[in-house]
Image (cartoon, rainbow, N blue to C red; front, side):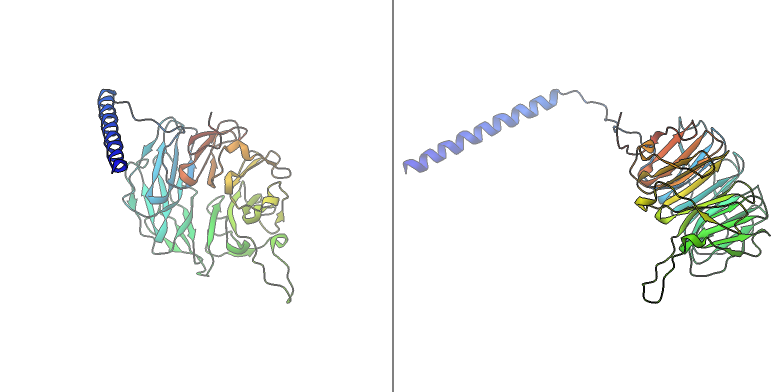
Length: 354
C-alpha cells in the first residue's frame, strides 16, 4: 500500500508540473510578436515543371509548362507575370514572332494564339487530338507543329486553319525547325530525321548511320537513340541532340550527318535541347547537364556546375549570342548574359545557395 501511495503522489506531482509548464508556454506565446512569413532560401517564380521557353529579345520572354502555366517577363526577368491560358492541359511549346503575336501548343491537339502579348489567349482548331510537343512559326502566317503518332500540322494563315502534313506513323516527333517557309526538319523517336524543301508538303527521310546500332541475328535488337532537338542556322548547317548524350551535325542540309564527340557521352544522359548562335552551340539535358562549343561543335566543354541545378533542363533559347534562357523541372529558370559562361538562377532549387 505504501508503494501505491508513493506512486499516486509522484503522478500528482508530475501532472502539476506539466500544467505549470503548459501555462508558462501559453503565456509566453501570447507575448510573442507575429513575424512576417519567411521567404524560401531560393528564388521561386513557379514550382511547376517547365517545358519550353521563347525569347524575342533581351526583354521579352515567355515560358510554358505543366498545369497550363504561362509566365512571361517584359524586363529581362526582373519581374514576372502569370498569364491565363483558359485551359488545363499541359503546355509543351511556345513560339512568338513579335512581342504581341505568338502561339502555344500542348496536349490533345491544343493550340493557343495571342495578338496582345499574352494578355488574352484564344484557342485555335487544329483538327488533331494528338499531343503537339513542338512548334515553330517563321513569320506571322506560316507555322508548323508536330507530336506523337507522326503528327505534323501546318498553317499559312496565322492558325485560322491548320492542315495535316504528317505520316501518321507510330513514332513521336519531338522537335521541328524551319529556316524559312520552305526548308524544315523534324526529328524524333529512334533517331528519325525528316526534311522538307516545299514547306512540308512532302518529307524525305534522312539518317545518321553513325548512331544506328548494327546488330546481327544472334543479338537483341537495340533501338537507335531518340532525338529531342534540331536546330539550323541556314538551310545547310544544322545540329540535332538526344539520348545517350548524342549530338549530330550536317553541313549539307542533312544529306549526310556525322556524330560529334562530346565529354557528356560517358554519362549517357539525354540532351533535350541544342541551340546555335554566331558560331556558338549550347546543349542542355538531364541532371542539369550543360555543354558549350565555341567552334560550331568541333570541340565541346562540359560544365555541369554552371547551371547550379541537378534537375532536368528541357528547353533553351538564345535571342542573340549573349542572352539566353534555359528552363526545366520544378520551376527551374536560369539566364545568361555572357554567352553561357555564367548562369543566374531566377527560379528553382540550386545545388549551392549563396
